[in-house]
Image (cartoon, rainbow, N blue to C red; front, side, top):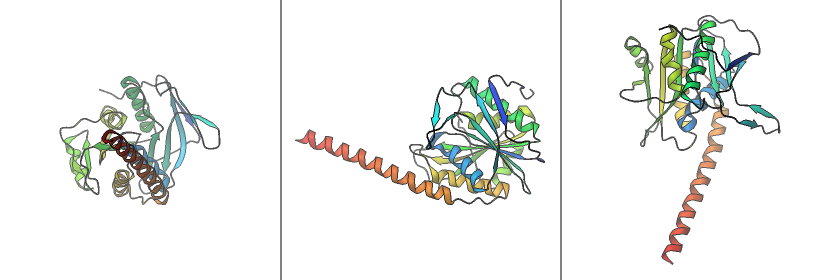
Length: 251
């Protein structure tokens, strides 16, 4: 089976032309605990990766984002690049496609685009939902070929077995084999109830080992504090409401 050339309902808008030698493609999209999105976006930001393309698709939800300054943006995906001893392509976005068909179409378009830029290896990252996550969260991985499993072990990643991976954070690397590319999926434990910065940080550490880049995570640390405050506030509100209902019942 060959890599699909399907680009139906997908548009890639280049901001600048990019030439890279053997770049790795790193992908992370919103998922459980937003782990894939947080990890991928803040890894790109932390290494000062440069945005060079946007991807739009009619398979995304019919929704528009209103920014803090009052302007609007359509939902989209973004491509970044970073040059170094190991060149990188980084793909992330606002959401995932709504349907299975859309997820496959967009994933194929991403892989075709990356392959055209010389990419031979794909890493996707995301959250692995568990009711009892470790502290720090454990990181699991899988590949498109048994011969590649040892590569995961070299970075301290545990093998994932007998599980299902939902959405584009699984589809993207699984389809890479059809494109003649090596594919890896790397997932950090999360309970998935709130944006999970701790799980995302574990993935960023793994990406740092794989790529050799050491990101500045000060922005992520600030975001972690802000999200923790929101989470604590919500939990307090829920507990207070539950206590109020209990008192009313006893009375």
